[in-house]
Image (cartoon, rainbow, N blue to C red; front, side, top):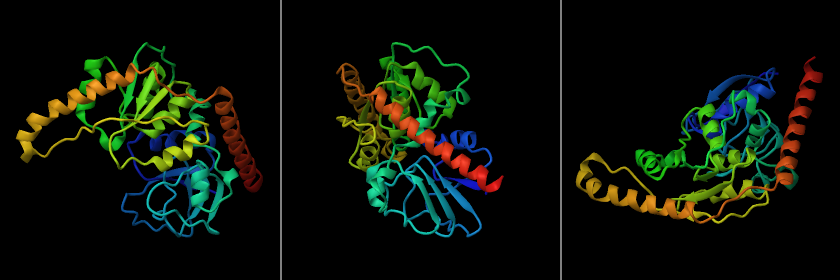
Length: 295
């Protein structure tokens, strides 16, 4: 059996982890990476097997014709993917995904990005020394140049989720606290035992996927709400000149206040370790089954 790694969004930290983690654990199974555009026009074919790993990708836009191996993915957008005879579900991201797909609650283990703690050596060659600094990771959909400027002014480490996996991971390891709008920023910080603090900037925030994962690590954090920063159209030059500096200053003040709040979150060591063991057990079982079947 050869599988194609199913990807939706290139250039985003959580999604990009797939291309490193799964070929590492399943070198004889994963033989290709396929990006599916957001219009979901690709229907698949009966002769291929798609491997669904990290990401909120279990929706109705998934290719209906292909065979599917579901190894920890989550639901969170549109309508849930139909689970049928073409699906082999190993586990999913959390109990909310399991319920949405009509699966047993026990299949909602946790997000498989926790494996970053087990295979860190293939991502970064040298673990950086932790500094007494705060990191900021916005969501990839609200990534504006102003964030980098604000971080420089505050002395924060700006972490773009669109940078390569090694650079993002090294920056995560170097900070003492991560303020993040990106869920996989929180997931990977937690796995790497770096305290984190979540925030949101608009009413389109997807709390379903966050709560799905959070329930697997026994956390119920309070999300800070920060004002959004947005780039105005060139035709709105006057508004840009007036509002952008004001927006930046408000965001800077709020981030400074948040950093000084003393709040942070980190799952208990025993919860983290148990989840990691569960995922590694699924990896081992799947690998053993493959070897027996195709030896």
